[in-house]
Image (cartoon, rainbow, N blue to C red; front, side, top):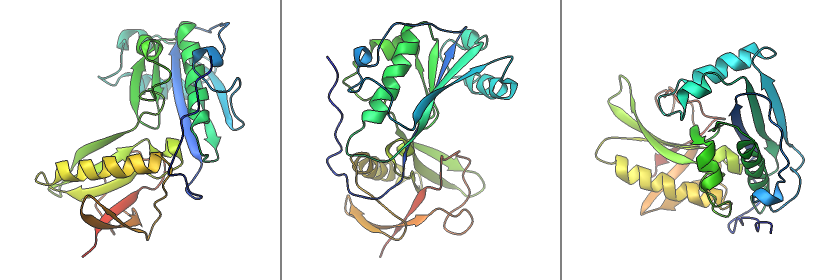
Length: 249
């Protein structure tokens, strides 16, 4: 039975396209007889705008170099096997933001198809996290934790003595990532704030540059992040320009 689409109860018009990029590592070309619906998709085919690109080591040396660099991450599962991967399938694309997350579910169902056919692991290029193939298959496809992965991270800002608290992966939902600057004393508060705002955006709310927002007793203004103007530069490869949250008096 197909999975029901995951709803977005706060959806309002606006925001951007939903962007997806799941890179599936495989030892060699895969063949399969599994369907999207059997792997948890509410639809039988990928939506328009989402597709699969095949890269092989001899035919795409620049992609292979990038893929090897990503697989060198200490958090990568099966690093030795990933280093010998000869084929990569990128399941991704852009689709208009919609009232449900069918596109995300369908893309992840194809990821599961590839994992069941013998892939090694999956790199989520938006959330920047790894999932071993066995974990992708063991997870309940009705639960969005892997397919709709995102997160909040805290990083030191070199030479400034402050912390950057930011989200990763909100572009998957057609929303811009968030960033706020603080100290060790308020990092936990900012993390909770961004996590709560991030969930609102995933559910379909829109936050644009110039908007004021109140959350958790804090009043904030969102601005397009401009390093050196409204915050120091941070070494985070955001998919697109994030929104920096500034306190309002």
